Image (cartoon, rainbow, N blue to C red; front, side, top):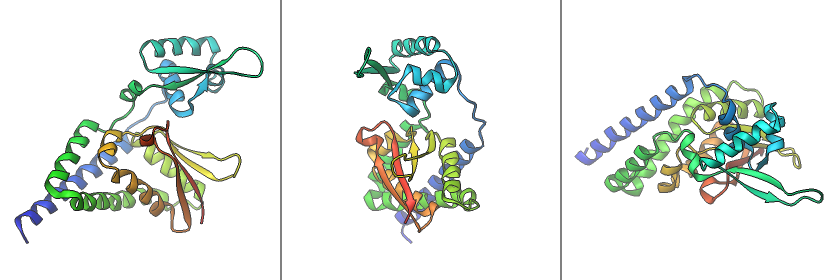
Length: 240
């Protein structure tokens, strides 16, 4: 075995260990429900574009309280709105998060990850990067399936997957498409966005991971993509 091959194997083991340790640490942390201004920002991230009245109803607080929080978030440059005309009455302000708000959500050490990707590509090339990503996916599959395989239904598997991904910072949730009845798996935040911009293979492997975790009899189709400019990554999930 050459020196380069030995170095490569050691590097892979180190990366996989770090990936596993980080994921287990994140999944065992206690997550608290945000309140006040943070709750409003969290809701905009999940549901935006969304109106103040819709947020007030969902949060169970007054419209005035929501608007006060929105004014503060806008002043900080974390939220912005676009007016939408309605058949009657005044236009409605629909709120969305700004690019600046990303710093308020989990980033999974994005600067370090981005630097590692640059260095790995320089040392091992594209073939080496592909090996690392596939090994990472296999390790993720093992960790995820320890929780998802016990679920008896597709909805149960998706709920478990959403819990796992939310613990890792993806703000994941399961929704139902009202028109088709299909399940939608939605990730409202990408904690590895900086790394994914440098290595699109991360997004490719994410889709492959969902296929493997949910089962061969399940079809997973990406509907929207944060890297393509969407507000969230969304997948349609249905029985094949």
